[in-house]
Length: 462
Image (cartoon, rainbow, N blue to C red; front, side, top):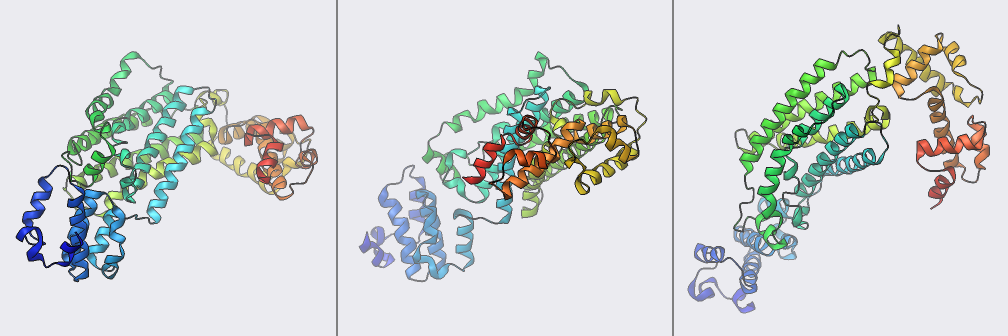
């Protein structure tokens, strides 16, 4: 083989030309390449590089990569002099590890989404069905974003079994969001006939199942477009029907939103949550339609248009994560019922927001919670309103009762103190931030930080 590399092309393969099309066709028609065939591609790429033949060095390097799956070959020292050429830059972009700031954003969004989705699933909730719907919605979006991350960075070549892994969830986005809205706005009770909404997902699972059973080598052949399978089977059918599904369910969600948005028992926080979620999902439907037109070559394949739907999806996942942290009551089954007792309240929305700002001033700037005998009456007097209005403002805007609201601030202070002064006595810290006894402090600490003060200190020291 070494001799072959050193001889002129007229002596190779019994007279066939080194860069001729005849040998290329012969190799491509062969279903299984021998090691000699692969080695020949490799040797030809190296031979061309040594002879400063950029065009054929790039061509045979790519052929070798496709059939051997050795993506690192493009970074071989033989091609160092070609590293700044357009041909080899293109090869590196196609096959070598390729990471930029946008890819890190995808990875960050996916990991946050997985965390939020799992936390929503395991947390206790009065309306578990609504919580499961929104958590699964977040998880499948996160899986899709993670899939895009692997694909865009070329890590897919190192993890071939991720091939098509997110495709089976293509028709779940719409139904999950639709039934979540239906559940939280109408307290909808699920019926057996609702299973028909899962029929498209079942069909695509049946269609794609044989592809999931392929071996690692067969999946790599598909990725490199050298196998007998189409690299993107049923592409236009899946994309077009997914767009149709998103449009139908998107219209149903918008209908539910406008039908129920004026419900008087909704909190301002809940209305904001619904409005933002509907807006983001509508933008996502539009961006996916644009993505579909890019794939169908109806509009030019511009990087911005391709990535738009992923950015929108990631933004939606991050917003849900933020909302679940900021207002956990939105996911806890208290969407409507929490504020039924305030339906007849005379507190207007503008006055409620005014009281909220004044309340935050008392707690975040004046730190009134540090007084261990602070009461609802005292806070109400400082706000210049009734205890009923104060209670309503805390409940509507923060999803907590008065004592939970106070203790949340106290625990945040306690955690900060323990982090800075890890040798402090725990009970001393409890008294310093406003608690009257250790039992209440420990209970509140575990409620808000999911661990005891001692466990928190141990985690800081490890």
